[in-house]
Length: 134
Image (cartoon, rainbow, N blue to C red; front, side, top):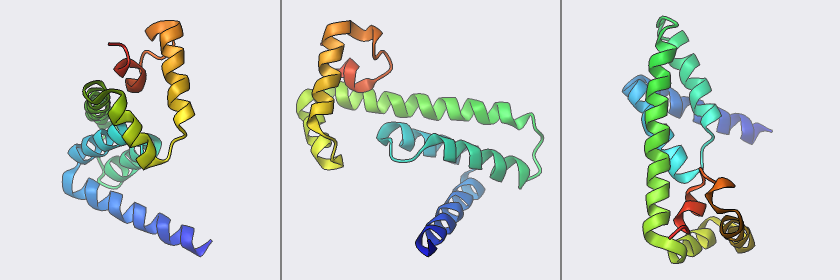
C-alpha cells in the first residue's frame, strides 16, 4: 500500500510540474502521448488538468472550453500518429509492437478478421483496423 502512495505522489508531482511549466500546451502534449501510445489514461490527464489548471491557478470556468480545444487537438494529433505508424508500417510493424508491449497476437488476428468481415463499420476509429484496409 505504501508503494501506491509513493507512486501517486510521484504522478501528481510530475503532472503538476508539466501543467505549471507548459499550461494548456502540457495538456496537449500529454494527450498526444496518450493517444499515440495508449499508456496513460486520458481520464487522469484531463481530470487533473481541470483541477490543477483551473482551480489552483484561479482561472475562470470559461477556460474549460479552451482546455477542451487543446485536449481535442492533442487527441487528434496522437490518434493520427498511431494511425499513420500502423498504416505505413503495416502488419510487420504491428507484429513487432505487439511483442514489445506484450499483447496476445490472437487479439490482433481477431481485430483483423473482424475488419475483413465487417469492414470499417465495426472498428471505424481503431487505427489498427484501418491499417489493414489497403
